[in-house]
Image (cartoon, rainbow, N blue to C red; front, top):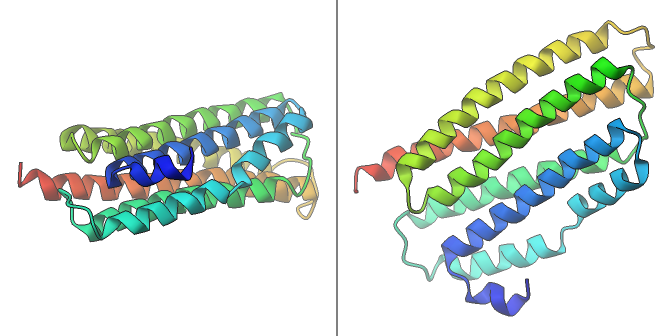
Length: 217
């Protein structure tokens, strides 16, 4: 999007645009892991490089900062800044995970491990897409935002339980505990969980906002 169009946006529109951009990047991250599973390293690296690109994000941040103090909003400016910063935190961690993944071309231990990773990725995808929906609703449908945030918490719990099972399996494989494969897969699983944790924490904050401002409806 051109800078001129970004400057015309209202604060809600900028926030939603940033959320959409962040969600798209994280969908690319999930797709990249899918390419890694089937050892399509060319597409794997292509998707991760997209996640790492930060130029547009800086433009969005500047546009948000220029509008926040001039805007009249239902929520307090402080709450709006916190929502925006939490989106940025999700985006930043996706970028960090992408950079870590580019350090090494791992080969997964077996087909079952690949299937388990795919299952966790589907849960992560659901969590992140629901988070985007909750952020979109927070400015106009507080009850929907609250309900979606609760769904995120439930999906997050499923993801964490599955991840613990997979980490337990990883620790019981016949491999050197200092091997690059072990360390990479451990970091990958923990990275997916941490990204889901951040989404769940964000969802909790959205529930707080929904409860806080429902009083005034």
